[in-house]
Image (cartoon, rainbow, N blue to C red; front, side):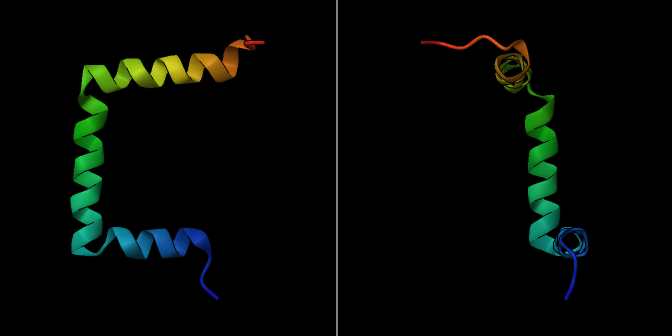
Length: 51
């Protein structure tokens, strides 16, 4: 049975995988998405809980 990493590598070699990879890279360069990700990471790292 193929490991998860092997299956991901195989997927990324497919045309659909390449398209999704390029789309993800473009989204990662977008400042709005970077800000959303920073906020999400801050919530997990910050230890602040809402009650």
